[in-house]
Picture 1: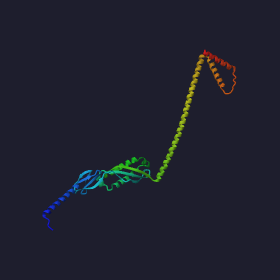
Picture 2: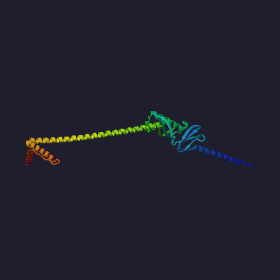
Picture 3: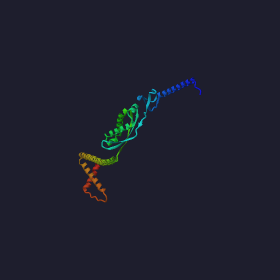
Picture 4: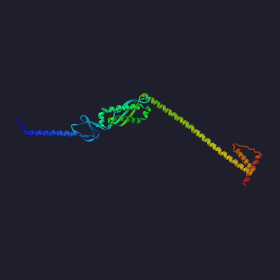
Length: 299
């Protein structure tokens, strides 16, 4: 085997050095450039300490000194639906199902201040729910669910702020009761419905009585008005006759008496069956006087 010339060895040594340098430069550039996706943030450490938080886009770090310690997603997250028992102010045991949505806005706080963020939020929510429901009666829990959700969200936001988290939504999915309480509430609801039906029926009867009384009162008022009109008419007729008597004297009075007698005889004649009228002579004289008066008025 022939010996390798010194010139060739030198050339190979130079090429190897260039190759190593190229590899080192490539690795340095690769480690210095960090491309962060839009949905993430990178937490950079230098010698185990927080150095920076990289946002979306192209970022540069010091190669071989800085490293990406954590890649944190900033997308909104949903905790698994959890259920916790709580006791209301009126000592009713309820089971509340909750759901929480959140997102990480400050990764440096999240990774260095809390280990299991989901478990921490779930435990905090359970404590807040029990505390808030303990101040409310069952009816208030059922009717003021929106207000309860707002209070839970505000209390949770104050707690998780130190963890670099923003609570976007907090929902109460359901409030369940035990069977005994549910049966008691159903019985109470049926009793309330029966009471309302009785009240409605009583009000209907009372309204009917009021309407009947109003009708009778209206009829009485109309009858009174009719009597008043008739009395006024009779008074007017009496006044007219009195005036005529005062002007015409006895003749007007005799005329009125004769007309009354004629009307009475006409009513008797209109009766059913055959009737025989026996008139006294004075009646005939009255007719004669009436006719004479009529004739005199006509002339």
